[in-house]
Amino acid sequence: MTDLIVVGGGLAGCEAAWQAAHRGLKVSLYEMRPGVSTEVHTTGDLAELVCSNSLGAVQRNTPAGLLKHELQLLNSFVIQCAEENALPAGKALAVDRERFSAMVTERLSNHPNITIIRQEIKKIPESPVIISTGPLTSASLSLEISHFLGEEFVFFYDAIAPIVTLESIDLSKAFRGSRYEQDNGSEGDYLNCPLTESQYFDFLNELLNAEQIEMRKIDSNVREGVNAGRKRYFEACLPIEVLAARDPKALTYGPLRPVGLRNPNDNSHPYAVLQLRQDNLANTLYNLVGFQTNLKFAEQERVFRMIPALAHAEFMRFGQMHRNTFIASPKFLLPTLQYKNRNDLFFAGQVAGIEGYTGNIASGLIAGINASRVLRGDEPLTFPADTMIGALHQYISSADIEHFQPMKAIFGLLPPLEHRPQSRKDKGFAYSKRALRSLRNFISENHLNGDLV
Ligand SMILES: Cc1cc2nc3c(=O)[nH]c(=O)nc-3n(C[C@H](O)[C@H](O)[C@H](O)COP(=O)(O)OP(=O)(O)OC[C@H]3O[C@@H](n4cnc5c(N)ncnc54)[C@H](O)[C@@H]3O)c2cc1C
Image 1: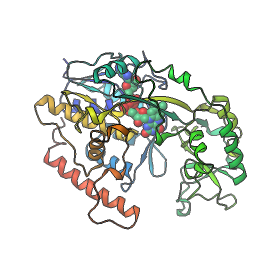
Image 2: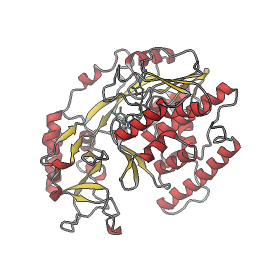
Image 3: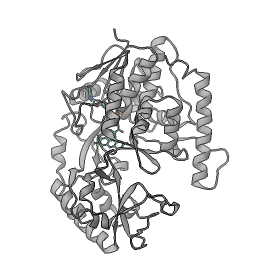
Image 4: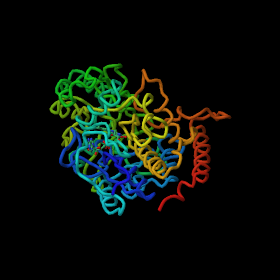
């Protein structure tokens, strides 16, 4: 007996399945891996994090931090698992990716209301369903969705950053420290790789002349015929070589920005700094933060080893370009995540145009709650516009369709504050105070946590 089908066991699908199951629905969760995989997943575990192991900032005066606080208030299952597998990462919530996915998989497998079925879904089910198949939705289902929705299906490309081993990093040329925190006496969670001005420009020169992987090879991963002509980079996740080509100093304002970091070895302020973030609990792997790239693998080794601390770096994963599939949500979805013409068909996660791990968890949470309400005969909920979770979902369902791109949590989505504080920090706290108050009222008015079983 199944009340609800969830297609895709990523961040959104796992959260959605848990929310619905905890409200008493019998859920069948379909995940195509490990039988059928994607271009970038490597395991059969649910909620696999395919790139960074960080779920972003935790401070409540930041957009991502506010969203996490909201998800905690809403009893998010996936955030709970992330917190139980947290690694030191300054003011961010980073996790041991293997333990995190293993915990999500085990808890959902043991849930009495959830059946996990390892199968690719190729057609949109006619019974109540949440489609949460992510940026790498399988080709067959992508094609089916594009036939179902018409032409408004868009592709573009993202890139992922490399990972190196700790033992291969030259620690005599790196230093520990979190941005702006070195004078607080804290050791700092990041390994920082400084560059002098001349090292930076030598690196830049090689980066701009390095060979890239031909886009045609990537195109072959994408089923022909589904808007194959409409590709573009996602601005928030540009390959460093694309960013660097825009302006010679662009990297020093982006992934190589040195602000808030001092090299304690010689008390200098470096011209540029690459930050490396711990990637696993065993503390053997480090992620090159913000270094998404589409260079050929041999070129990544050659060029990235020009950074002095990485001169002998051993690459455990190279950066790669990847497909990112999402639907034209403003045309098709309500802020409840229901398809406008069928109230028991939901889209959630990246395929619905939400960007970022935490946003996708939030999206799964809304779809799971609303699917259970619809099936019980209750009105689905539109979350308040002055909360981050509400603002994000109102945005994807009402944005300008012509320029629509996936959206992550940002304060700009929230309605203006009545009194504008002076500093950005104070503004963040003011947004956050208003949002959390509004969400608490909303939870209590709708007995949201009371309907968990
Ligand atoms: C290469 C890459 C790097 C990224 N890096 C980051 C990052 O560093 N930080 C960040 O915040 N976000 C990143 N993202 C975006 C990231 O994918 C999302 O934030 C998040 O994982 C999306 O969650 P989701 O649940 O929508 O999709 P996913 O987590 O991808 O889950 C979708 C699931 O559906 C399954 N599936 C697909 N098609 C079918 C089918 N037909 N039948 C059954 N199962 C199916 C897939 O196997 C997968 O398990 C990245 C995305 C990609 C592709």
